[in-house]
Structure formats: C-alpha cells, structure tokens
Image 1 (cartoon, rainbow over the protein chains, first blue to last red):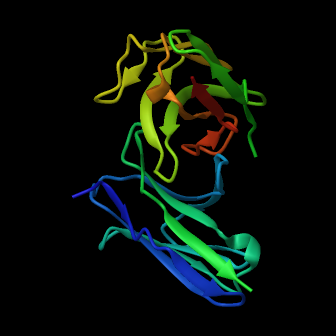
Image 2 (cartoon, rainbow over the protein chains, first blue to last red; image 1 turned 45 degrees about the vertical axis):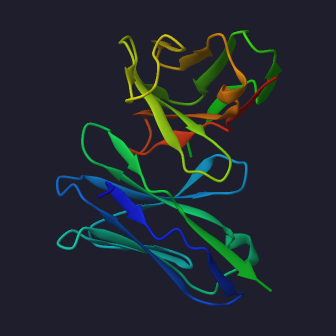
Image 3 (cartoon, chains in turn red, yellow; image 1 turned 90 degrees about the horizontal axis):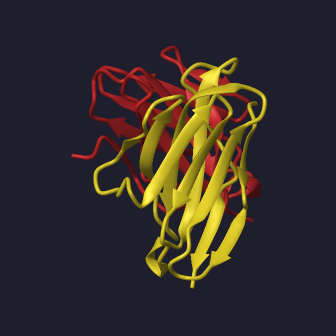
Length: 109
Length: 117
C-alpha cells in the first residue's frame, strides 16, 4: 500500500461545479497535512494546510479525519483557473514529507 | 509566503558534462531543503533531503555520487548532476522548510529544466 494515495482522476467538471478530492495515508503517526496545486510545467504551490478542526479559505475547504486516515479538499463554484493537479502531502514525522501522485482537475466552460 | 529561488531556470548541456543547480531561500532560513525530480506527466520524486551543515540523506535508488548535494548555509543548497546523460533530462525542483515561516510547510523553487543532449 502506498503511503499517500490519491485518485489520479482526471476530474472533468463544468464551471460552477463543486468537486471533492480525497487522500488517504497509511502512517497513523502522521503529524501535519497539506494540499498543494501544481500547474503544468510549474512548481507546486501551497494551497492549504489542513488542521484537525477543518479549515476554509474562500471556495476551498479542507478536512482531516484522523480516525479514518484521510484528508479531503472541496472546491466550490469551480473556475477555469482551478484546472491543475492537486497534490496531497503528509508529514509522517521529522519533516519527512510524503507526496501523493496528484489528482488532475480540468474545469471546462 | 516564503520565497525560494532556483538558478538556472533551464539548462541544455552535452552528455558527460556536469551541471550545478542552486536553490536559495530569499526571506527565511532554510533548515531543511529537499530536492525532487519530475518526469513528464509523472509525480514528484524525492531525491534527497539535506539539513544545513549535514550530509544529505538520499532516497533509495538515487546515486549519491552522481547527484552531489551541498547545503553549506541556511540560505543555499546546490545540486550537481555529474557526468549528465540524456536519461537525466528532467525537471528538478527544490523546496525548503525553516525558521520564520509556518512550521513544517514546504515552499518550492520554480524548478530547473535540464536537457542533456
């Protein structure tokens, strides 16, 4: 089993749609969690840190479920500019960061 | 957010030459830097982790003698691809975590595209 697993997609959604991504992790001692987005041929950029209480930033909501060992990202009112690959990142301890393979999202007009 | 720069942004070289890539944290002290490689349409692959003043820790399958990493200061790490070959052509990205920025959050450099002819 991979340490961090994501549905690779692709997710093709119309503008305005709501889309959700899940990410599961295997190490129960994992300490912190992040979502990054990566555009084609660019570096990953931090989208959100994921806190145990869940957090929201505009159209984006991230949640953590430690019992089931998954984190989620919800995007509301999708924009064309949201098209990217979304990476789930888990710190399993001592700044040992593990990346998921990414979920590709395409938002269409 | 924190800024990480990389230089050069792209390089084309002949097979057998060595290429040095620099990664700098511009507005924070990078206690740990990570080097990744990404092939087209594939996910990031961690190559090595380096802590300032210490030897880098390489991931399994990454040749430490081929990919030389130096993290001599809190703002600079370098990756040298020695005797580069066409199969080393890839997108190399560094990231850093450190003091003065949100804890445990990685900030990435813009990447270096290496093409070995």
